[in-house]
Length: 415
Image 1 (tube, rainbow, N blue to C red):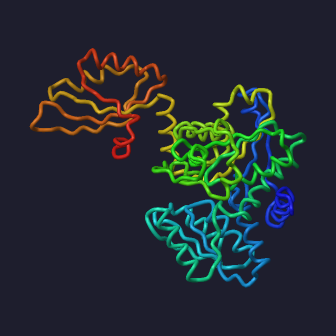
Image 2: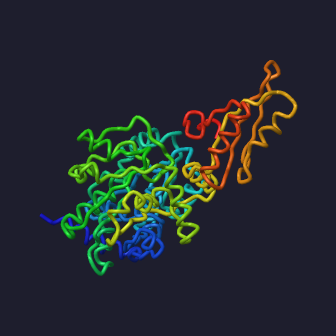
Image 3: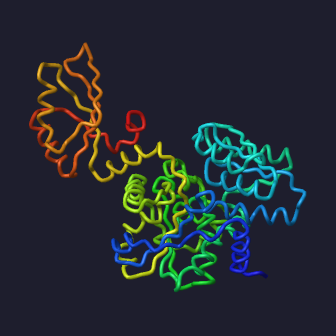
């Protein structure tokens, strides 16, 4: 039986027919910050700005080798998988039908169309991904096409394992620790199996967004289970249920080897890498770097590889990323304030603000039948401790207020 490492090397050789190895770069900033030798495997620099092209290429090549008469490849994706499939369809000159939710940002639709050219048809179906996937599966069955899973496919997993094969070739010595983002598990399953054979001494830590911790849930249950709710902010890793085949590879993982990181904290890492290093990462692409904050003791003095899985970041999201980062750092808060309807009430509130406090949002709703009005107010400041002073001033002034910064239900409607 062919070893998994041999299959991964075959996949790696196949990658070279389409694109060069993605860079493995030592990052001086992070190395100094954490007292370690930290390298970034820059999957954000692939032709489609993510590692997804690897699994698509390997899987499609194997299908065409076995059944060259395959007339159409089908996938359902709102992002990186769609772009990878489109690029490879054009490469092989085969037809692809890509189903995307109606709510997919236009930028991602346009990029997928550019990568696929005349070889790809894009169909916008459903408001939510589950509806999109169901329609793609129906079409695939009716058309006799080949459905290409974004992660739960052995050939896709082997293709993603080429990332690990390149890391081992590019480093002068084997890494002490590799940090992997986890969504559906294709990348982590492939890299894990490869390193288990090629570098068993290398430790692996897996990183999930806190609002979509499907691997954590599966390890706790012993089987893949579907999360009741998923936070879609880290869209490249926001998967409700880890794959069956990928979980088979990851099932031996100790639960304490999986880290969950807050979505808002990831935003701080995105901004740090953009402002300090000029590196553009999507939220899922920043997961492995963000996890360094929780692993300071473990990484110190070690050779560490962080896989930056993607860089398809829509800059229209930048204001939201900054907002989330400020809220996580305690530099921005939102309040519902009850403001008395009397002359001078607003002036009294403004005098409670400190010299480093700034009003970022102010919405006032006057109720004619009441003796007060409701105010939605956002405050930015330079130091988190300034809010303690503000609270004291508001309390002393007799103001009635509620901090709604971390109230997800309210925030969903008003922030």
